[in-house]
Amino acid sequence: MTENLPKPVDRAEVTVLVDNYIDMFVPQATGADHRLPFSPDRLLLAEHGLSCLIRVFSGKHEHAILLDTGLSGICLLHNARQLGIDLTTIEAAVLSHGHFDHTGGLSPLFSSMGHQVPLIVHPDAFLARRLKGPKGQASLRPPDAVALKKSGADILMRRGPSTLAGGHILVTGEVERATSFEKGFPGMEAYRGDRWSADPISDDQALVIDVKNKGLVVISGCAHAGIVNTVEYARKITGTETVHAVLGGFHLTGTLFEPVIAPTIEAMKTIDPLYIVPMHCTGWNAINRFFAEMPGRCILNTVGTTYRF
Image 1 (cartoon, rainbow, N blue to C red):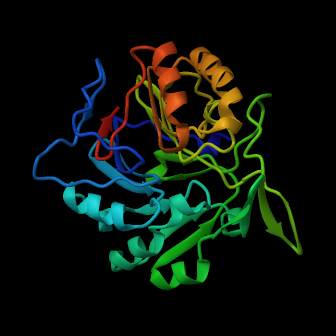
Image 2 (cartoon, rainbow, N blue to C red):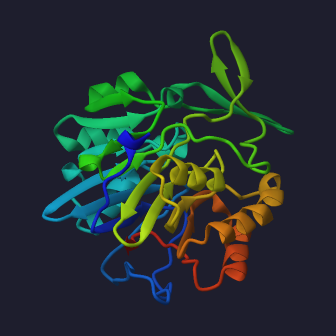
């Protein structure tokens, strides 16, 4: 898969526009290069969702793309304005998967752009979905492809790996499931053809950046494929073993995923990234255990933070 290798960058920046958590007094992490959003005049919002602006720099060239758009669109557009970020400059948007807490801001985003913008998405992101549990089932509304096209999205559906930003950002496409402990989301179903069936959430994908002399920066949405599977697949398709940082949702929250936390942390110790930034659906228990077992490497994220690699 050498044609999909991301070109190395001199620098990468990840700005968190939407996440579940905000704290203006989170301390600067030792050794990490990140800018915290504290200002008494800057009102930022949080919600159950995720959106990250990714910028990469190579020589005199700069590229910007957006990963996901949060739950409502309100946080995304408001926080971008508060941080002085002009989202009309992005080259493309990428959807990590089709769940509502990542797609809610798509139409507001594209409607605000004033021009057509590519949206990189796996075809399964548009499937009707539901979550079955002991107390019944909940319908999960998929994004509306017709409405998105009308609002200005140039929808590019891709299953496999591809690159953006002049070849500097890799979109993994479908992630291989290789670990014994990452088994997806129990109870999730999708409507295919004429019936409901178990949903492996095959549209789950991540972004990968190769920072010169540092290694890979892997950015997940929810990592429904498993954050370890995601990182290992990034290593496989890039041919790069060194992982500098892992950011995003790890989906380890709740009792269903409690047994997955320990093996995930043990595997992450073996991968040995310098920085781990768990966000969104990782869950408070899992975040605390990462901090306890990998001290000095974990950073508590807060909305508005920019990480520089």
